[in-house]
Amino acid sequence: MKAYLILANGLVLQGSSVGMPGTTVGEVVFTTGMVGFEETLTDPSYYGQIITQTYPLIGNYGMNSQDKESDRVWCRGYIVREACKTPSNWRSETTLDDFLKKNQVIGIEGIDTRRLTRILRESGVMNGAITTEVDPADSQAMEALLAQIRAYSITDAVEAVCCKEPYTLNQEGKIHVALMDYGCKKNIVRCLVKRGCKVTVMPGHATPEQVLALNPDGLMLTNGPGDPAENTQIIQNIRTMLDSGIPAFGICLGHQLTALAAGAQTIKMKYGHRGANQPVTDFALGRTFITSQNHGYAVNGETLPAEAGKVSHVNANDGTCEGVEYSRWNCFTVQFHPEACGGPKDVEFLFDRFVDRIKKSKEAKGNA
Image (cartoon, rainbow, N blue to C red):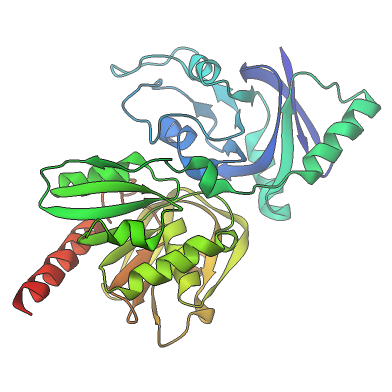
């Protein structure tokens, strides 16, 4: 079945349908990962977006139920050069096409994804649509679809993806972490549980009173989708919680929200960082790590108030802020994903650092 990718600038690329037929509109972005396509599809941070995979063959090792980062697919559509129809791996349970159909995801294959990526790099991310229903030769239908594409925006993203009720994992854990779910990937929880933490997952909009009433030992601020500056109440909540002195660790959106709470500003990037090969320099260690990332916004490090903290990591490619060490609060944050095994586990030690801070905080309280 024919399918078309239509961009907001009017460009039309013809391919073939993969997954569900139909029409979907979203923000078209690209990710450079060669593997991890199931994790990508189920990452809540892609809410409202149409994902382009730059690697030409996707689905070659199949899909399975163990690698999902959430319980559903959040993206609006999926673009690949070729969807593998005969995956080969002992863990494979189904093909990419069947997975997309099961999750009602509209996709397209057979277009030049390298060309599309160059367009997005040069022009910046832009809205688009995948359709099997609209014929580009039908000028009236095209005009109506282009109007829909150009009017599209991602709003209320955190509210859409976060859990609705609190729940707790690893009740026997000796360290209690309250995890703020702004669109949390499951592996963040796994990394904490692996280190002996009891994790209470709280909805992203939970109030400081609700969170601090749990008497947690630490606070985890997770990844998530959308424009961080849109979350004005959550930013205020984070400021209140961190003012309590609780040890905290922020990842991705959690990093951005914390910086906003400290008085810094965020910016929308031209095409963002999405992939598993982003180099990040850690000033304290004097080392550069290969990291996994997925974000379209960044903290403007130059706007971080000096009394609040200092930039601790930068991207070695473009110099953007990748981490902050706070002096105002017992908190550190990173833009990249230490749970995502970018190199393959180079920066997972940050979870150990977080747990160590919690232990020191508990010891200090015990000696007070």
